[in-house]
Image (cartoon, rainbow, N blue to C red; front, side, top):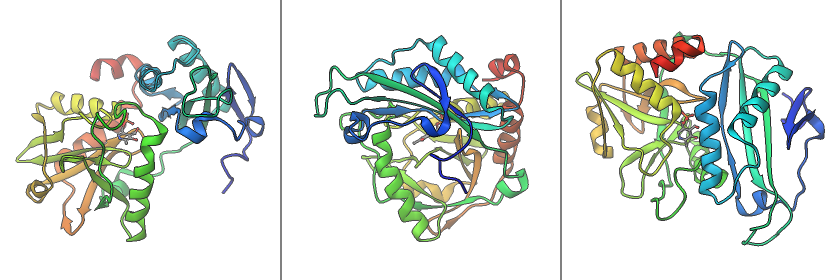
Length: 297
Ligand SMILES: Cc1ncc(COP(=O)(O)O)c(C=O)c1O
C-alpha cells in the first residue's frame, strides 16, 4: 500500500491544486506543535459529496472555536472541495479538509499566524457488502474519558481531541477488539473513537445527548430516517450498566456509516431489525440526488 505522502493526483492547498507529492508544510508549524488544527471527514458517493454544506459549516465553526478564521468563505471552500473531487475523479471517495496555524509564531501564543487550508481526496470504494457489515463490531471500554466542555473545546473537530481516541483505539485493537467505547467525564456513555452511539430498547432508540462530543452529521441524518419510520428517539444520559438491557446497538459516522455492534466488553448483542432498516436506508440516502437527501434529513 502507498503511503499517504506518495500518491498520484492533486491536493488543493492554500488556493490552488498542486501535485500530490509537492504539498508540504514546514516542521515548525503551530498546528503540529500546539494542536492548532481542525479537520473534516466527508464521503463522496457516485461523484457527489454527501452533506457538503454541513461539513463545510462545521469546519469553519471548528476553526472559530479554536480562535482562528479560515481565510476562505463557505462558498470558496465548497468550490475548492468540488474542484478537488473532480480533479481526482473517483466515484466513491473520502474528502479530508484540514486547516491549521502556520509557522509565523512558535510559542503557545500564535495570534499572528497565517491560517492554511488543504483539501485532499482519496479513493474509498464501498468495501463492505451489507452482509459483511451485519456481523457487528466488537468494542472494548476505552481507558480515556471524553472531557467536559470546561476542559476542552469539545464541539470542535479539533485534531488535538483525537489524541485520546488514538490511544483508546490502540488499546482496544491490542486485545483483538475493533474499537473503543468512551465514557464521558461523568461516567456516562459518550461515543466510540470516531462514531456516535445508539441503542434500541423495546423498539425505542436511545442515544447520549451530545453535550461533550460531536453531534455527528450522520447521527442527525440517521435520526431523521428513524423518525420517518415513526421510531421514537430519546436523547438522554446513558449509564454503562444500562447497555445489558439493549436489544440492538449501532454506531454512526461518516466513515462508519451505520455499523452494528455485536459485542461490548463481554456483553453480546445481535444485529436487529431497526439497525438493519437504518443501515439500508442510510445506504440509499447517501446515493440519492441532493434534493431528496435534503428533504430526508
Ligand atoms: C469522535 C467522533 N465522533 C463522532 C463522529 C461522527 O461524526 P459525523 O457523522 O459527522 O462524521 C466522528 C466522525 O467525524 C468522530 O470523529
